[in-house]
Image (cartoon, rainbow, N blue to C red; front, side, top):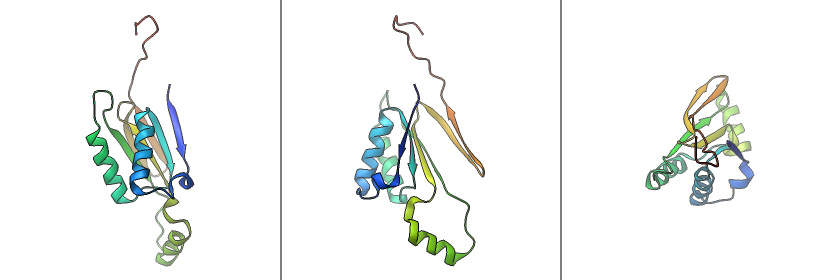
Length: 127
């Protein structure tokens, strides 16, 4: 079964960087595809990737990560004003376990998740 876990920005905004990374890793290691409102700071993305590499096992192969931003604003003042109002909640982030998410493709008007083909074992042990 495929599980999508929505994480609203207000669930993580008051967490420290390490707590954010740990929360996301916990969800992904439970084979959930995380749809997070907003985005991580570049240092948090780096920490998430570092932590992933440290925790790779036979069962946990790593993550796929994609951040999607709204259209770029050309007006510098308006861009600054919007950033002051909404902070890092613009856009959204997708994080999934590499055993389920083969690739994430971002296009101007859509996001494509390419999932790995996996077959669940039946109760009698056959596929």
